[in-house]
Amino acid sequence: MSKIEELIERLCPEGVPHHPLGEVGTFTRGAPFQKRDFTEEGFPAIHYGQIHTFYGPWTATAKSSIPRDLAERIRKAHPGNLIIATTSEDDQAVAKATAWLGDTEVAVSNHIYIYDHSMNPKYVSYFFQSKAFQDQKQRYITGTKVRDISTQSLAKVMIPVPPLEVQHEIVKILDTFTDLEAELEAELEARRAQYEHYRDRLLSFNETPPPADQVGHFE
Image (cartoon, one colour):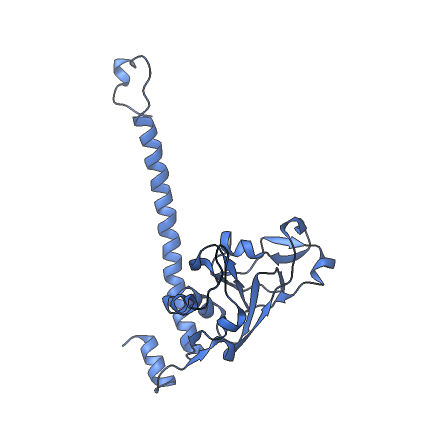
């Protein structure tokens, strides 16, 4: 029996309860600001497009900043909140989420929902990546070219809510696999670069033959 199974048997012997996201947290929509508002220094900020292009399942730092006077008028995510991109051109990326693990608040743009909850932030973020979430959200996505999901719809999605001790253990295991995946991707990228280097060397020929003592040798 695994540690997670032992914890579930001890802490929730009748099974893990499932709740709608709207029952175990609240959704708030971000407020408008543009990428042209970014500044070198200022208040930390996340634009919805960056959820798709830059951020992973969680972050403790913001890539961008906006002027502090503008930030005063912008809704903010608190540490532990989930930051959810509401729109995309493909269904898979609709409701892509990042857990905010920074020490301060962070301003978020429109086309973002802030999900405030009391669960393990990484646990919720991992759930938003899961097949269980993807299958449920699909029935609620609307739009043609630009696909979207509403807070009312997200609030209906069911999430398993085991005790926090179980959530922490699940996160610990998934973090290990995430780190391993990153190492494998780095190794693959290094091998790809090596392959491209030798491919280009092997397929590059001088117009005149090289000296006989250099044939078959590479630096």
